[in-house]
Image (cartoon, rainbow, N blue to C red; front, top):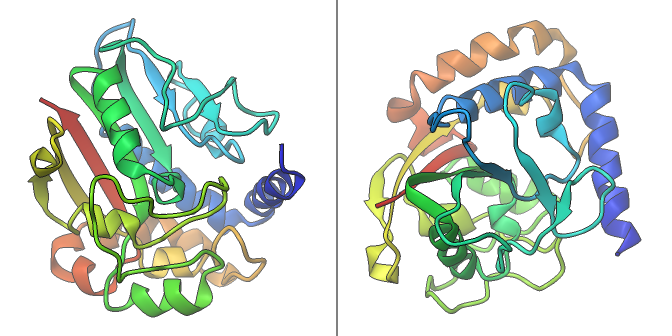
Length: 251
C-alpha cells in the first residue's frame, strides 16, 4: 500500500465534508448515475470500482452494492484490480465508477473484463472528465492530473503508468465520443455506449475536490445550475462542459 495514495484519498474525503458546494454537486452527479441503473429485481448485483474516498456511501443508500478499490483505503469492501475482475462470467447487472476509468492503465482490458462479467443488457456506468474547447485548458493547466490528448487509441496501448493515481483526463473523450452514441465493435467488444455531457458553472463553483477554493455564494444554486445545464447538454455541452456520463450496455 502506498501511503501517498491513501493520504490523497483522505484529503479528498475531508474536502468533500468541508465544502457544501461539493456535496450538492455530487448529490446531483449520483442522482444522474442512479437514473441509469436499471432494475433487475431484488437480486440485482451491483459493483462499484474505484470507491476511493467513499463518496458513494453518502448517496447510494437505497442500493446494495459491493465497494471495491485497487488499494486498501479502509472504506472498500474488497480490493479488486479493475483489469482482472474476480467475478464469474455474466454474473453482474451493473458496474459503476466515478473518476476511475481515466486512471486505468489498460482501459480496454478493463472493458473486456466488464463485458465478460456483465449479464446480457447489463450496464457499465461511468462518470468522467470530458475534453471540450473550454475544458481543455482547465484540465491541461489547472487540474492536478495530466491531460494527454495526442495519443493513438489502440486496444493494446497502455495509456498511463501502473501507479493507481496515474491518469490521463483525455482518455474518456478519446475512446467515447462526446454527446454521442456508438459501439466498441471495432475493438472486438460487444458493447454499445451513449455519452451525455454536463457540468459547467455548477462544477466550477465548487472549486473541485482537490482544492479548498469555492464560491460559497453559489452553494444554494448548485442543484438548479446543474439541472439547467443538463437540459442544455446537446446545445452547449461540446463547447463548454467539463464532465461526461458514459452508459455502456452489453449486447
